[in-house]
Image (cartoon, rainbow, N blue to C red; front, side, top):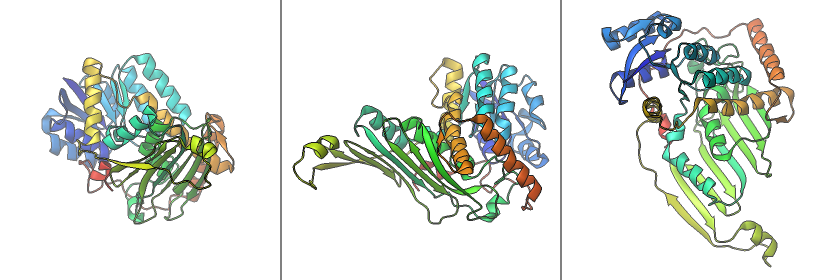
Length: 394
């Protein structure tokens, strides 16, 4: 039986805690939680009773001897430091997304994780979705041929000003360390690289306060390139309603489209490159076979990740989302910010020192302007529950 402690019991942490407390993960139990907010600690005491220890600071939880593993669900900047401290206490660590705010600190966390020999995972629950799993399988199988283009419009992240004012750490360079790319989109950026691999160059346009009174970006467009001349575009926003969630991958043997929870394949009989150079017709009409892949309903991805992490600890089952992978999606968002701030293409890997300098400048500028939000830290109405937002049928 793996004894879990939850560090940070806001929206996501409270949902993880309830899932463990209610026995939704075999061979796992909730034994401790920590949060600096007294209201959240009171909630935990009332919710879980005397069988779960409640701490004000995470250090006390880590050294309590009550846990074998921790789930870190605190604001972004703190993820690497808390994880490193947990590894030094010989604890297994599962972190919420993103891995951190900058790749330099995440690299250090990864180094400590590898040296510890303990289990390390990240809550990339979208990797459990059968739709994305099927899409990855078909791409790796070569069903679409050589990939030419990846496009993802994911702008159904609509948020109101009230959302941004619901917590003091939201929508600020000093709190979250970024906007839509770092808060809403780490899952999507991970799925992008999980299926396609890492791009080598990006150009990005990140518009700060485009649709809300915030300092960070609430609208972003990323263009990326791969060594084989394939390209990618990623468009996201929290200010458009109704939104779109459409992922399209085009290759020399056809294309795949994922939208509204449905995966459709459009397959050619012949390679398009062969058609291009050998057909005698200017605009040939080639046969296209359309296949709709039915995706079955499934258990919530957060629970699947915790189950998998528990099985990895107990019997070595391969991790769905290794913690070391967290740096990949973060590298894309860091590179995108650096591109937007400098107005130029940015290679991956990029100059981490330069990125941190410019991020610090953003933080200082924000402090000088003052926080425009009069906010209090309160959990959302859905705190303690997993949202069906992640069923990908939007």
